[in-house]
Image (cartoon, rainbow, N blue to C red; front, side, top):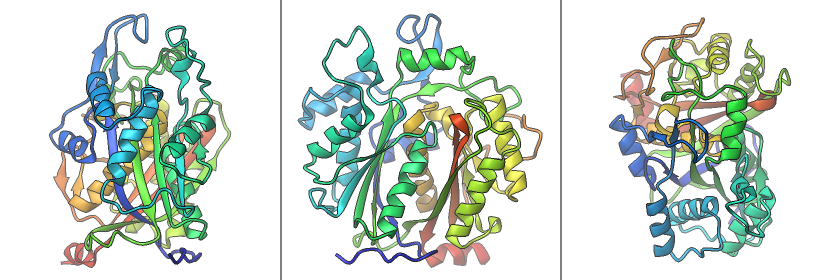
Length: 400
């Protein structure tokens, strides 16, 4: 197969297929259907499992996970997280026609903590929770000969993994990339966020005046990228037209309150895509529902000229899924473009940021051609990605 041509603004990387596994289901269609219906996967969990107090979390159903893993003959030697990833990859690859055993296909893995639960005294296995080892176990399962690339950079990991894979494809290194990522809720992770007093006692409320912290969730998502669109899908092909990442290095856990780092990432992503802020039809934002993150995003969107652009956040549905968040939200942004839908920001009622934001309050139809996905994380990391639809009829509807 002819490799991708290395050119700026070619938009030559296509999203061929995808999947989401999480608290709202085990397929993209099931998750999006629940989001359209306004259903949240967040629920309260009893004292003792992850914390010494009752807190809300968004968890993947263990019974269904085990049943699906057994039904697809996924060996029990794989951890719970790896089973979620394998189920996600299996579904995304179904019908794609991609030869994952070829040397022109690479696996890119996104996670922040990986198999961190293996450190628990309740899991006395010999498995070492090394992130690279989990990546190797995944790619070897599929017989892929290329060493897995593991991207772990706090909460931008998922967005950064897609951009990393897209750059490798644009550079002609590979013809296809299977980008998968996930994280699970564990006592280790929960205790860390509790020490920062970052967890809300209630369902999270992105950008809302009453927001008081985030809700943790777990999940996995997969996106298969290629240098050519899926030949079986002649309409609404999705391109990854540009992306960028930056690091403001202001604080180990708090963002730069002026949004300088995220602003730069957005500006570079737009430049890489050959467009301006006025060409963005919607922003699928990070929206953690913490005081500082949401305020920082409002500052950023004002700076780059996106204050009036529709903005939606998805963490009211799944919680914050860490290394899976960016991927799950990108898959949903892809569905926004394909279905011409803006999704409600669940939990939002009244604006609680100093700068204006055009928050999407109801799921509705809208003419969409380009969506900007943003993410920010600990250590001051930021990422932005531009997704576009290859269907001129969308542009025609927008101008008529």
